[in-house]
Every structure is written in C-alpha cells, then in structure tokens.
Amino acid sequence: MSTTKRINQKKVDQIGYQRGRWAIYLFLAIVVVCQLLPFYLAINASMKPQTDMSSTLMPRLHDIAWDNWTAAITDGQILHSVVNSVIVTVCTTLIVCVVGAAAAYPLARRATRFNKVISALILATMMVPPLSILVPLYTMLVNLGGANTYWGIVLVLAAINMPLSVFLYTAFIRSIPVSVDEAGMIDGANRFTIFVRLILPMLKPVTATVIIMTGTTVWNDYALSVYLLTDADKQTIAPRVASFFAANSSNLGTAAAGALIAAAPLGNRTRRRSDGHRLPVPAEVLHRRHDRRCGEVTFGIKPVGRSHVVSFRIGSRGTDQNRSVRRPCR
Image (cartoon, rainbow, N blue to C red; front, top):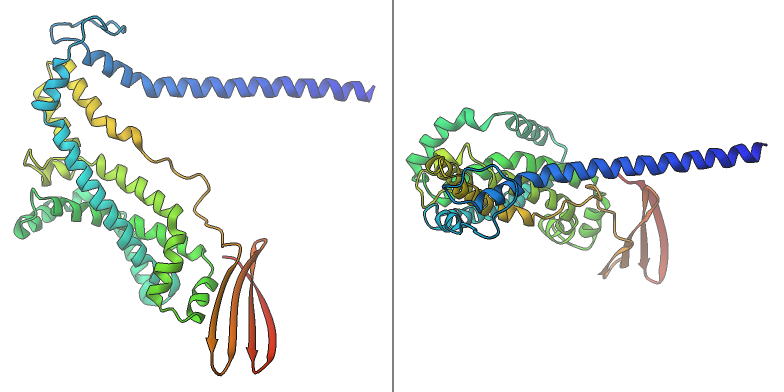
C-alpha cells in the first residue's frame, strides 16, 4: 500500500513539475513578446509613407516607403551621431576601466585611514545627482574650451562613472588572496609589475561588468550631452534623436526609421557573465628564485576547498626544508 502511495505521489509531483515548467515558458514568451512588440511597431511604421495614417498592424511589403530611411540618414544625420556616440563611449569606457582598476588596487590592498577616507568620499560622490552640478560644470568647460568637444564630454562622463567603477574593482580585488601579491614579491616584482602581470589578468569578470554598465550609461546619456554638446556635428545619438523627433513630429515613419537606426548598435551588446565576480585562484602558481646564499626558494599556491595552501621549499647548502601554511580564502 505504501509503495502504491509513493508511486502516485511521484506521478503527482511530475505533473506539478510539468505544469510549473510550462508556466515558466509561458511567462518568458510573454516577456519576449513585450520586448519585441515595440520594435515590430516601429518597423511597421517606418514602412508607411507620410500620407498613410492607418493603424493596421500588417506591414506594407508591396509598397515600402524607403524615403523614411533616406531622410533619417541624410537629413537627420543619425549615422554621424552614431559614430560620435561610438567615439565617446569607447574613450569613456577605456578611461573608466584603466583608471578605476589602478585606483582600486591600493585602496583594496592598504587599509590605512587615508584610504578609508578616500573610499568614503568615492561612495559619497555616487549619491550626488549629476544634474545638480550641471551649471558649474558647464561654466568650467566653457572656460577650458571643452564645450562641444569630444574630450570635454568624455572627461565629464568618465568622472561621473568613475566612482562605481572604483567601488566594483575594490570589492573584487579584496576577494583575491594576498598570497598572489606575496608570490610576486618573492619573485622580485614590484607593486606595478604585480598589478599588471598578476592582478590585472584576474579582473576580467568585473571588467566585463564595468564595460557593460559604463557603455550602456554613456551611450544612452541625454541629460548631460544635450547641454554640453549643442553643435549638431558633435552630438551623440540620444540628443540627436530627440531633436530629430521634434523636427519630424508629424511624420511618424521618418521618426520610426531614425529610432531603429539609433537602436541598431544596441543589439550587439556583450552578454554579462553569469559566473559572479569571483575569479578562482589558478590550479597551481609556482615561482622560483635563485639566491647565492639561500639556494633555491620555491613558492606555490594550491587551492583546497575554500582555503588555499601556501607552501615553501627552501634549500640551502644541500639541505631542504618543506613548510606549508593553510590560509582561508577571502
């Protein structure tokens, strides 16, 4: 009797599992439709001529109004603004990643009072709205000659996105064992070499996160770009599309074509890694250094579970001594 009950309970559990899985599939399908429906409506509107004011959802494949796309490219200068956005986004992201990683390394490795104050100030700047300092920022750029220039908007956007970058890099570097730095010091490397040769290659996961967050923020920025880039030749995609919409408010087909051209580069975004921000220690890191007085010194790191073993082998004048110390991973 008990066996029959278990079999029936197993069948009920399987039925419930199948229903739950189909419910998840249905929910994901609804989310996908909601995400793709605006693009379909924009494509449908871009195919209609200005005289067509119908609200049909079927595309006009027999009579496509290619003039909308031509007007968006030539009159709206959408492609030129896309190039401007690419230049600003790439330069800003590069500065944020390089400077953020370099600034986060001493903050993560040296827990001094000065570094704690700097970290607190960095967190405080993240709570300051960028629009609250727009007037003094614009005045400073005008005095420096940075208004309507690439380097001016790049410096402003890099300064705004820098605190979050430093915060993420600092948290990630703290999760890397200090033994990696000690291995480099035993091998005779200085701090700069340790950062470039050992720490920097381990920052790939958090660097991908910083690139995605900074790139999307800079690409979609409108509030600062519309004030700092008033020249049409230097405008990025967001303010240019806004001004193009205002000029073509009565022509929905041309406006939809411009929106699709502006949104096309966003379809190739890099997917964020799902393995978290923790980078495992390599399976075995082994450094050797020869010394005339101490002979051969070998330093190794081997992870064991949630801890790592730091082992030393010191040989001097024909004698070998093996030592190992277990340290918990941070």
